[in-house]
Length: 336
Ligand code: NAD
Ligand code: WQD
Image 1 (cartoon, rainbow, N blue to C red):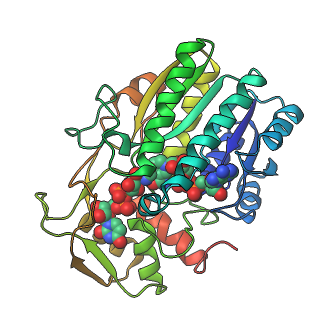
Image 2: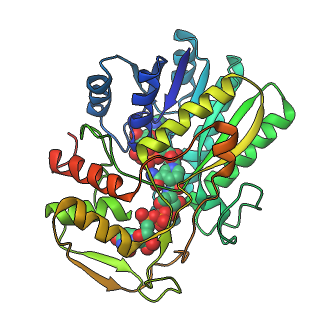
């Protein structure tokens, strides 16, 4: 079976390629390297001892995508390719709508043309907006406060319409919570360009000395220690959820959404303390003001993924922090 992985050189995509190759799938990656480097895919090959097929191509490039489908018999697609910076999406909404939504529509059209109707889509917990916690798949989605999140909501809706029009499609919408951690080899991990927006890569860069200090965004929330609560999930657990979802889409039709989280909420201070333990370093941080748009607390009810996909997260925050630190120390300047 051959799986096309869009955005396969990225953070979650590269870890998923490792799991797919280890499980015996043939893997074809398409990535424009906007937020990644080709070396990541060499490292995936080093980790697995297997090779994958690589195409440097933008998913908005219809001819390029058609060439990939013509040259490979693709059985299913895992669609990671997209831009993901929440703050940037508010400054550059059209870039996000163009890249994420137009790119996805081109991909779905090419899939249809080549009669490949099986897809796993990278959605996000952000689609739940301000719902009560824990988030459940039955809740209304779409009350989202930024263009990035709206692209995820719209693409879910588009795939819903695609399935309504043609019941031969088989679609899994995976709503990720907060992925952190790295492959335990330390060869691949999260390596954002510029100053990180997300908590864990920021912490790792402070610990390694590339950034001077972490600011905790808000210490006055109505939570156990005043800082925000999130459901952090090890990226390898998340990658394994894609194996289960691929299996599901290959063996049936329909459209389903799944929460992919641990079901446990940790505060920012919990993460800082776990990271200090894993790294043996005292982290330089201050409590600052709240970040606009942050919700006080959210975490997953992952029962549906547990029962229907047969998937369950295995790793806790200690392992997430250890693997992040291992990756950071082995790649102090990132992956070149
Ligand atoms: P990432 O930026 O590391 O990976 C995305 C990859 O897609 C990159 O390699 C990038 O170069 C590529 N890409 C972007 N636009 C492209 C295009 N038009 N054509 C071809 N390639 C393109 O991000 P990630 O953290 O691995 O996230 C993967 C997916 O999961 C994204 O869709 C993201 O929105 C979603 N997601 C991520 C998180 C998170 O916290 N990391 C949470 C929920 C959902
Ligand atoms: C986590 C916690 C911050 C940085 C985002 C997207 C979401 C999803 C995952 C894609 C929050 C706090 C952070 C810092 C801090 N992505 N923080 N200081 O905001 O939960 O989710 O990434 O779909 O859509 O919104 O993740 O890692 O940015 O923040 O105190 O320098 O860490 O306030 O409580 P978030 P995050």
